[in-house]
Length: 201
Image 1 (tube, rainbow, N blue to C red):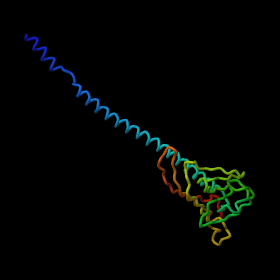
Image 2 (cartoon, helix red, strand yellow; image 1 turned 30 degrees about the vertical axis):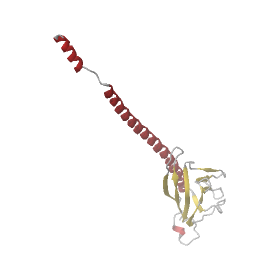
Image 3 (cartoon, helix red, strand yellow; image 1 turned 90 degrees about the horizontal axis):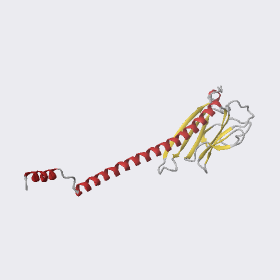
């Protein structure tokens, strides 16, 4: 065996590739890392979708509450309760609260039909009845209202001392919000106050 042959055999030993076991271990480690990474990415994507869906639901609730408060502030003749909530509307207080609230919207006369916000206990929604008598829900199906109370003070001037109290309605809403794609729901407790802008003194 010549010197060149020894050199070729030594070079072949030093330049040898990976063994089959080394390749299998490398591919196995790579697969484990990729599975963990893809799983984490999918979890983050699902969490982001759930957060966006819940945010959309809560935005619907905020818009409904803001609409109630804004229209009540501009309205007059605050009437608590569904009984007697017809034209001509009379002011009725209820410090103990009720599930319905009526008032005359901005620009209405005393003989116009009132706007009524009420609690739909069957469908667990907040309903709005306009001046044409049409009742529609103002909250999305994904928002489940478990309790809705209206507290009205200062509207009925027949009570002593109310002549100098500005009419005010406090709205208390409890419930939970979710989405059909979500397995968990978020519980909320919202309180809003509407003070009549038109002076009642």
